[in-house]
Length: 375
Image (cartoon, rainbow, N blue to C red; front, side):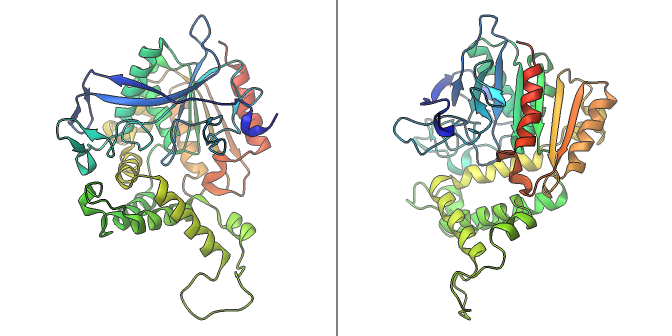
C-alpha cells in the first residue's frame, strides 16, 4: 500500500450556513459556506471525532487523494490514515477550510451576493475566535457534541487552543504543535513585510484585482519567498542547498545563480498560481491578532482558566519562528491551571516546517498520545 493512497480517494464536502455569523471585528457574515473533508467513520456514540485545523497556507485537504488529481495528496497525509499516528480506523477525522480561505469556504474570492461581485477587500478580517465559532457550528451539523481531539500545527495549533478556550465542553484533548500563545514582534514584522509586498503590487488594485482580471503575482511571490525562508532552519537550507551554484562559474549579474535562489523562486511562482492574495493578508492578520492573554492583563495562566481539555504540546529544536520557549510558556500556563499536559521538544533540523515532516520520533509521540485517547 503506497503512502499516497493509504486512505484512498477522498471528496470534499460543503455545508451552507444561513445563520448570521458575528465576527470579532464587529462585522457580520449573513451566511457562509464551509468546505471540509472526513476520513474514517463516526462511531455510534459520536465520540471519536478529531478536528484538524490548518496553518496559514493549508486547507481542508488533509489526507488522501482526489480521483481527478491523484498527485494532489493531502498536506498531512503522513500523519493521518489507517495505522498512522492519527489512525482513521479508530478516529473520524474532520479537515476544515477556514472562512476567509481560498479553497472553497467563503472568502475574499467568493461572490458577495448583495453586491453581485467578489468580496475582495470588503471581506472582513477574521480571527481564530471567529473560526472557533465555525468549528462549533460544523460539529453541531455533523452531530458531534464533543471532539475527542482538536489538532493543529502553527496557526492550526493556535486555532486548536482557541477552540479549547472558547468551547471547553466541546474538546477532550488538544494537540498543539509548533505554535505560540502570541507572535513575537519579529514574527509580526515578517508578516507585515509579506503583506506590504502584496499590497504595493500594482496588480493588487486595493484588493479588487478580480474585476481587473489580474493577480498580484509579484507580491505573492515575494511574500511566499520571505515566508519560506522563515519556515526553514539555517541547517536545513545548508544541508539542502549550501552555496551550490547552478552552473560552474559566477555570472556577475542578478539572475539566479545559487540553487537556494532557484528553489525560492520556484516555490514563490507555484504559490502565486495557487493562493489568493487577499486570503494571505487575512491569514497573516489572524496570526498577528492571536493573543488569549490580551484580555487578562497579559497573564496567560489567567487566560487558560476556562480550559478543561488534556493537552499535548510539541515543539521543534530548530524552529526559530515558533521556538520551544514559546511552547514552554503554554505548558506553564496549563500547569498553573492544574490541567493534564504532556510536552516534548523534538530534535529536528527542518525548522518550523518540521511539523509537516515524516519524522519517526515526532510521529511516535503523536501516535502514543492518540492511542491513549478513549473513544
